[in-house]
Figure 1 (cartoon, rainbow, N blue to C red):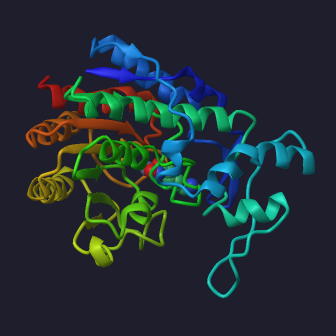
Figure 2: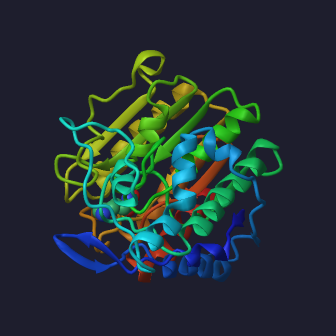
Amino acid sequence: MRTIYSPDHARHHGQSELIDGKLQPCFEKPERAFLVKARIEERGIGPVEPPRSFGLEPLRRVHRPDFVAFLETAWTEWTAQRGAYDALPLVWPVPGMRRVLPETIDGKLGYYSIDAGTPITAGTWQAIRASADVALTGAALIASGEERAAFSLCRPPGHHAGSDFFGGYCYFNNAAVAAQHLRDAGAARVAILDVDYHHGNGTQEIFYDRADVLLVNIHADPRQEYPHFLGHADETGAGLGEGYNLNLPLRWGTGWPLWSEALETGCQKVAGFAPDALVVSLGVDTFKDDPISQFCLESHHFPLIGQRIARLGLPTLFVMEGGYAVAEIGVNAVGVLEGYLGG
Ligand code: 6XA
Ligand code: ZN
């Protein structure tokens, strides 16, 4: 299996995030992708290749143009106003206020974000463009039929980013950009299976009223876990998209028996949709020792996830999302790929 990887991810290296009431060193750090890439090489999964450049147009297929433009200039605006240190938002237009775009950077940061855990740094723009190109390059390999499966080693991740907001360490929604690219290249139906520990609220928001992209999410119950305000079981899609969104929330402490049951349910939903291609939002923060998560999967479970996905028999693009237990991130992420490949 080919892996698409860009070293430009390392240009995004946040100092700190607001988490648990404290400014702490970012959990989402360059080492994550370095270690996954190292494991790919160690296990001989296949070649590691750079992305092609797709420009901004594919991003604007799922993100609002003003949001894309905001991300491009946010660092410059922030440094002009504040100084050369990471930008974080502080105030949000919650219901009861008005979402009117402010003129100054502090207001814009709140307007276009969902949390204070996702810094914009000097190299964020270059890294998020590269990350989207990594996803698009993988999608193009699948779309052309050149490859039956590929791994887009994206960093930063993407599934919390919506049509016009960033957050949850995510800026551009790489999986959504890839799924839309597959659609635009001729796939009539695309399924996205999100196995990250967190609900992919951004992906859900982007495709919620569409019947051409099925989204299945297996994640920690939003009543307990981030992102808290989306991901409930009764969110099934809207309008034409009714029935094309399946949320399978699970309680803290969930281990393999219940998690794998949800995977089975999710895979059956995907099979019933009979998509032309599958995008897997591959987070490995379901691992028992993940520092910010509360599920209990063990390293030997990750190949079983890949095996089950392989049984769907679909052209499949794996897109890297979360996972913060850096000592095991390579073993767990590559474990899924090896399971898929029959290892
Ligand atoms: C709180 C947690 C962010 C979640 C990031 C993640 N700032 N999402 O792994 O999948
Ligand atoms: Zn996650």
